[in-house]
Image (cartoon, rainbow, N blue to C red; front, side):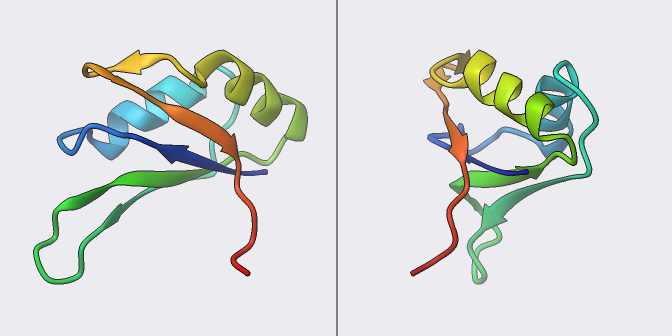
Amino acid sequence: MNIFIGNLNYRLQVETLEQLFAEYGHVDSVKIITDRETGRSKGFGFVEMPNDSEGEAAIEGLNGSEVMDRAMVVNQARPRE
């Protein structure tokens, strides 16, 4: 399951995000999207979890939770249109 995470603190590290999601199950990959020119975080990212039930538990458990003074938005990623 591909999970979208929005409203991230710009200083949040990939390792921290991975630890948060690992509490709910196996994490395949974590990616925080950065600006091509500055390398600075854009404040959102994606987490890939192979087990859908673990992914849904992570979405339910982490959506709205505060990390580094920002309430994360966590939901299932949808393909671009």
